[in-house]
Image (cartoon, rainbow, N blue to C red; front, side, top):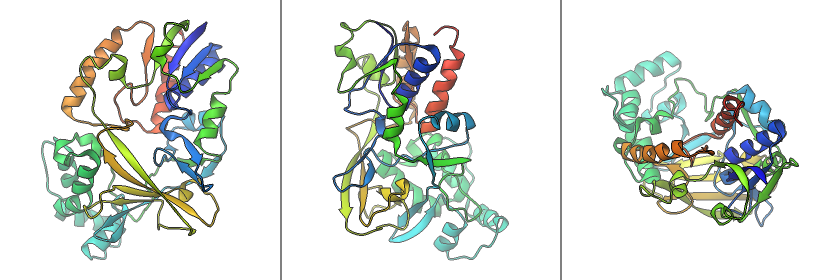
Length: 366
């Protein structure tokens, strides 16, 4: 007899399992359809001995001391500040857009924040009201930078142009007035010293946690006794697609191993124009800090079908999700959490923070 059946062993499921087992002495069965824990953050050594992120680069960053200290129970850390370049017409530019990007793109020599601010004010085109992602970018930087770095890249990534997407999509992307080339500016920027998989394995090693990999939870419902469910999978699948499938973007990966020490000038290079069909190339040694004379890179091709990666943020899709959420709220003893269950793009630290908050808020009823 289990207190909780937890569906999915990614960040949401693993944090919930660990906290319930260690802090509330609950008996947990965590069920995962894949053959590994860690969800999309899973990493492994490829056949050449290079540590890779099987489902694409996952960079840990957070401003939350609570989240960082919580995960530090299960891993040592390696300091890492992620950097990304954009390949536009064969030239490389820092991303997010900063003073270096602007100077190189426009052939100017702006020397301080004030000059950049004034220059961008001559390029920006005021849009009001802000209705979509195109509005929010052009409102900040104008048409030239929008066309170069956002328009076609967004179409490749989402199969929708920015004017078809919620402002939240490109609203996540900052524009800097200085020459800071870091992709993130969070207080805590680290990578798990031994990788994400080892961190998850330690997280789920509590004596009260039993794992069932390669398992469809629906096939064990009739034979497994439990009090409550924590569900972290796609919410539409839980309800057998009663209101139709919620759209996701997926990614196809192509892998290349090279007998050279380094291939790229940054960990990730975004291909922002239409010269190449892929959106991003990542070299994993930057992320992991691995020392070796060989390297492995991945090419990302966004696609409609496959593993669900990114909820597609349109008003129509949000309305469809809300139908499912209404049904979810009527479920007794079933809790929905995580990116897929909430049809919401969350960073890893946000998922952890949400789970910790959820358990604190429900402490009296667990």
